[in-house]
Image (cartoon, rainbow, N blue to C red):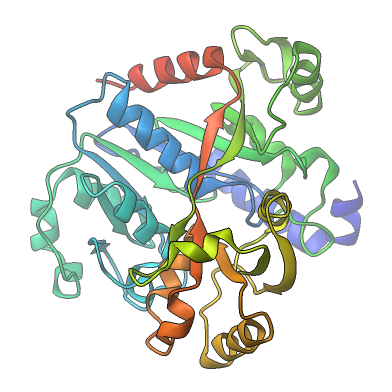
Length: 376
């Protein structure tokens, strides 16, 4: 109610936009192969990339999709290139975006592409031969890739012109959509009722253990009726079946940003943390159990590190000469593009990989069955 009054122009614009698609005034396309959309209605911080990677692990390891050609398509936020591009291992984050490059680095067997038009990008991934005859082929650097059997759409829930076979919306445990507001009063970039259009809701960054009462409370707050925590599903107010899962973030073994990294610095007692993500508080809390935080640089999300930024980090490292320099996995992709980082800093720079993981094996088993249900 507050949003529809104080932010009426933005609120009514979103209402009209969705109405145009819902009534068929704007055409909605479907890809020729099954697609999974991973998105949110919040500005950053819900864990889209870790959950895309989690889905890839399930598809490649324990599902009926083993052996198939899996692809990921993203917009490639803040990239310098245009049009459709295939991401390659060892490429630059400036050309493709930090998140697509991170996914390609961790899953080299997966085709990763960037394109502002998800519909056209899916068409190229499903039918690579069509790329050669298109205008975008002139700007595409790497045109050879296998035809995809399944495509994951990274951050495409607002991309209404393409309807996914399975749509997943992420909701942050620490910032639930039902307690938030549209920008700039809050962090919602879309109407909160839009979560009802998703096939699956995943509450991310949950505590390690949850009981049935906590899950049911979340289901009620998210508008799910007749929720069954064992079956992980309920019904929306419109009668649509909707699945609800709960995941946590797990921090993995710390790794060096550069090959020059000296692991002896990991035994330091003091920490300089620098990040360019939406919310680094969980990481800071995690590292505080092993290190004393002596300096903290918090840059904007997807920040391109400048000489001035690195100079500030270097000054802090001189002030604390035995400290370790720590950052995030996503930031490490952009740091490798920086040609002005000295060896003095490279030996001390490390990042903390993260993984999304289902709270329970039951959630995971049901989710895998949904993935297998996409097979044609």
